[in-house]
Structures are given as structure tokens and as C-alpha cells.
Length: 128
Image 1 (tube, rainbow, N blue to C red):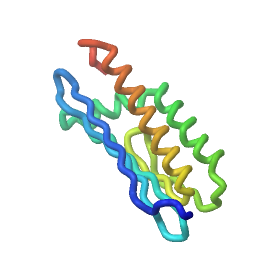
Image 2: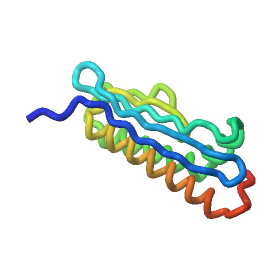
Image 3: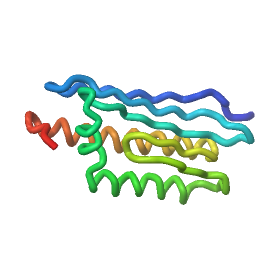
Image 4: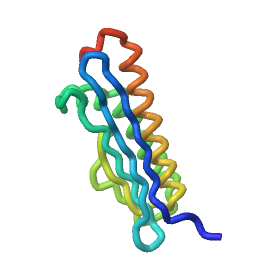
């Protein structure tokens, strides 16, 4: 029995009490040759990309993101794996098997949830 070739979509929505919603999406989709692509984009909050960059691209999260990518590379049995552009906020990785592409999406999603939980835990102190 072959695996499904359907796209998988993950959505995230966070509502900042002062600045409004922040929406993100992850898409895992098939490519030719049996390979898969994972794309992610968290968007911006309050139409202020600097605020989102300052929060999502903090050193502690950059280090975790590097670990997520390294894990994806370590798990991949594909010589076709490419990560042409990536940050914890947006990026693309392609040339993976479906399971690895889904694992990467789940890991990026978990990182986003960690970042947003940390941000929310700061209470009214949402400054960067």
C-alpha cells in the first residue's frame, strides 16, 4: 500500500493582546520523484516585521532552529535534501521523504509553539 500523496497543512494563530493576531502556516507537499517539500511562514504581527524578527530570531530560538534543521539532515536518507533559504520564521526544505518532511513540519511547529508560549508568559511585558 502506497503512502498518500496529499498535501498536509498546519496552521497557527496567536493573538497578542495589544498588537493583534499573528498567523502562520506550514505546508508539506509532494514533488516529483517521490520527494516532498516543507514550507513554513509565520507572518508578521501588527504589520511590523521587525517586531516579529526580533522575537522569533532571538539567539536561543535560532539555536533551537539549527537543531531542528540538523535533526532533519541527520534523519534524511535523501541525497536530494536542499534548504535553499530558512529561518525560524520562514523557509523551504525540499527533497525529503514524506515522513521526514512531516517530521520537519512538526518540529518547526513545536518551536513556534514554544516561542509563542514564552512570549505569552511574559504577560504585559511584550517588549523586545
